[in-house]
Image (tube, rainbow, N blue to C red; front, side):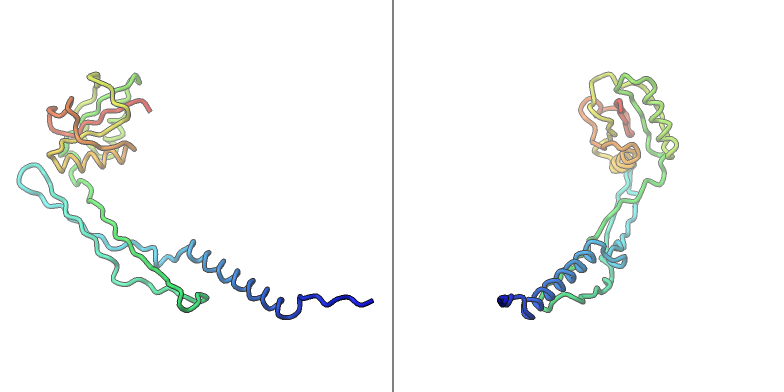
Length: 192
């Protein structure tokens, strides 16, 4: 008795080998895309400057230039006619306040935790800020620790943003209950 010939002759084996080679090539391309290259992940050059203007405010001018050249990438293993897209992003940053002592800071406790305002004041002072007052805020309830600034002062806004980053809080313009308070940044802390 003879056995029938199986259809797994050379053409099917060749097709299987081509499919395996393609799978390996695509896995390699995927791994390269996920890992990226150090030369491609460099940040573009960013320049910024702070100019003092008449009055107490400061204006910030920030600009970003894209990098002069992007390092070439290899396209080995990518079939001809395949579209390859490369993108570069520009980032802008504001320069930090140079004279932290020039911005008055008050820290007010809006929680039942005793000494929270003083503790927060020590954190800010260790970061270079000068805290002029600590106390309690009992005229309402604030849901989360927030740093407030006068909407008409770019310097206060920048200082509030920096302080908020230090405390892991948000910075917002003053609300009606504190809008007429004396100049400076107001930090209202709540229980952690």
